[in-house]
Amino acid sequence: MKNKFLISILSLSALVNIGCSDLAEQVIDESLDVQTSNVVIEVMAPAYGPLPDAFTHTKNYGLQLISTDQGILPPRGSGNDWYDGGKYIELHQHNTTTANVVVKDTWNAFKLMLSRTVVAIERLQPLAATNPEAAKGLAEMRALRAYYNMLMLDYWGLAFKKDSTSEDSQILKRQEAFSYIESEFLAVLNDLDNAKGPGRMSQASVNGFLAQLYLNAGVYKNPYGTTSFATADMDKVIEYTNKVINSGLFSLSPEYFAIFDDNNHSNKELIFAIDQRQDLTTSHNRLGYWSLSGSQYPLAAFPKANGTDGPAITSDFFNTWVQAYGSTDPAQADARFYKENFTVPQNLQNLTGITPANDANHYFLVNGATYEINRGIQRGIQWGLRNASNGQPFQTVNGQYKIYPIIEQRNGFVNYVNHTLEIDLENPNNKDYTDGYRVSKYQFSRTSDTGRNRGNADIVLLRLADIYLMRAEAQLRKGNAGAALADVNFVRASRTARPSVTPPALTSINLDLLYRERGFEFYWEYSRRTDMIRFGHYEDIYTSKTNTDPRKRLFPIPQSAIDGASSVPGYLVQNEGY
Image (cartoon, rainbow, N blue to C red; front, side):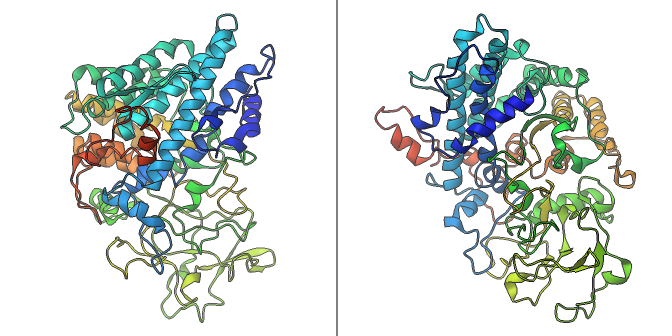
């Protein structure tokens, strides 16, 4: 069944990049014989197909990350690289315009995903009465549609209610949107399989998304005001997180970074993820390469596969680690901060007097087949394979690969790649290619011959740690700090693969500490913006961002979308503040 599903996505994936238009729905072969055994899979596959593209760095990932205190992307070098019309600067400074390309492309991608679910639902409904598999497929597509609408509600404050391709969508906001999404999840919950692997909607994933919906209910119903947390909503969070935890289907990963490895599809922590395989044309390695230095070459087999010097973390976010661990380097205290996959020999670590001009013999050797770059937050001078010119073979000795301090290739071969903490948008001298601590959370796909393509790691959208920390937050907001502390410490204590850096237990918990803990656990995933809003920090002042307007909690509806709906007056109304 799984292979058939992946083959269905593969056969349709070339259509994913079609714009959000009527043509985007022409992905189902109307000549399909409805009696064939795989018709349900063929109908559902297009609804999942656009996910890898929608959650890439120039769409949802960039939208979620760069608008927060965790990620910043200044123009680099001469000021042209990554400037891209100022779209990332706008996002980070909360000065986003209605023409912002990241916002527009994410909107279009989400609308495409929604349209695909409507087509699937319409196709499955006449089969569901007599075909049990079609009935399950129908439930799965309704759950997926509800999830896509929850994303729309989170980002733009609205949901689209549509049951037929022949009718116009009804636009719902606030309480109406919340209630519609809630009702759709609840209507299909018991008709879904308990779990179908992380790439498919299941009872477990819907239980988790219901918990997210109730946890953010106060934000979704009143996006610009002070968020309230009703006891009834927090009880629902606890109810639905309990269902996931008590199912016994999932477990926390002893190695934190294994959650984001190439082979993570079988990791028991994953509840819902974007299923990627190297042979799918939509699979990408963008989350693995985006932050890495352009002079970093993580794969001995592919001398053209490098990073791109994209975003770095802000000093504000890094300092939360410093505040947590004081004089102890967080790399020596918390398994989530860093994983050392190779160690520079002691006799080579001191670079005093060593420069790119005289370091020809300043290297050590590794086995190229097993070579892995270090993961987590990358600081200081970086070591790795040295590629003197993009595409040229790496240097070897008797089949072993030389590992050197990496030279910044775009600075005339005079400096080492030295990632420094300070980075901002204002200082013209602070936009070097090497500036900013980088993040290597997802494994750099070992099958990516360009660094951009052929991703193998499933993109994680919901995992068990979030279930525990949502339950902890609900308990804490109800006044039960003891239960909250137990859940937080359970997650911390689970990272046992490297016992010396298993995070120590906290002795107390409050909302500030829980917010910090969510930052440690889920940094550079897909939750920071939502967390900042819910915890009341989205209007905070941090690196290169001073806008405190609460109306920026929602993104602007793209002007192109409003123009496209202008034939129906009042149908699509711009969000406040734009």
